[in-house]
Image (cartoon, rainbow, N blue to C red):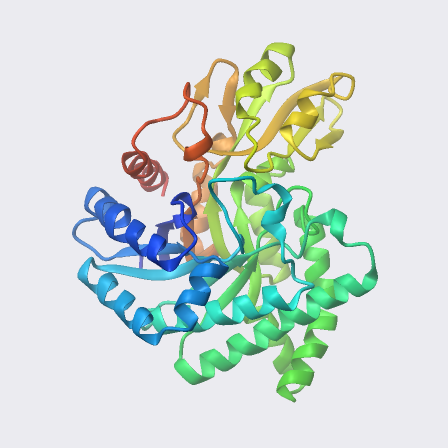
Amino acid sequence: MIIQHQPPLHLTYCLNIHAGEAWADMLSAIQEKSSLLHQFVAPDQWFGLGLRLGAQAVNDLANDPDMRRAALDVFAEHQLYPFSVNAFPYGRFHDGPVKDQVYAPDWRMADRRNYTFDICDILAEWLPEGVDGSISTVPGSYKDWITTPEGVTSMAENLASVAAYLAAVCEDTGKEIHLGLEPEPDCYLETTEETVRFFKEVLWTTGVEEVKRIRKCYTSEAEEIIRRHIGVCFDTCHVAMQFEDPIEALRTYRDEGIRISKVQLSAALTVPAVEEGWEELRPFADGVYLHQVKGRTESGEIRSWKDLPLALADPDGREGLDQVRVHYHVPLFFRESGLLSSTASLLTPDFFHELRSGATSHVEIETYTFDVLPPEIHPGDMVKSIAREYAWVQDHL
């Protein structure tokens, strides 16, 4: 939905909350859930969609032009417009263990690049005139998987290939689409500092050379293509996990000239680092997703665990911590339960002022954990819960 026209700001929710890998599954969710949500939230205007297209759905659509055209008819029937795609999870995202496989294939791999090419084509076909498109993706790789300089070079070259491809798509169709790398705990790009360094020292050097090779163009044009078509997906849960200030992080990217492709509004769990607090975290240690843990001492030292069960089993490592944050996307309207609260409190009026002032053109609500939320904090009906998140965001915007 359009929040404002100048500067443009579109709001959606990420459909990764709905289970299913085939395009037929996603289409059913759109017809049954998104259309109903539209009536709850904004019945008098067109309603934006933040699609989740995994590899199976992309394969379905890429090989069937009639299927793509039929989807446009559904969008028109329900007054829906897709403007963003979550292309982070390539494979299964529900109904079974995901853990670190959510990052595979990573940006060293041709499969990740080619899958993203197909999403570029699909989104360009569906994107309304005059609306830019965003695609969010893995932050390079999982940090443990990158062990050589060659791996970094491969990531930069594949990302540059997508930038060059998006430039060609823009020339052919007039549709401007940008790819957003999404920094996340324990990934190759984790902190704002790491991400800025990757753009400046790798993407704007090695990546630019690859665009020059593909496009047979000058350095200045290649750099403009990278800057226009490759940016950051700014997930507020992930920023909070680093104990970073979201306003400062947002301004850092802007000051460095790095595009904010999309802002995902999400909140992490937080709890004081006392034994009772750790006990209240135990129900959140599910077997589906990685729930990275960051703890901070009073002196500012940050300690990390790759998953919540590892932190729960490490009482010695938890000694001396003051506060704990868990990568667990809880609803934005969740305030507290016992000692548990969320990092949504970091999303201040000044932060939302930045969003309205042109920091990005796309804002996406991204709470995908409803299927695994413990019963004691589960808000109930999914569609009504997402509508509550929209109300929370609209109040703050």
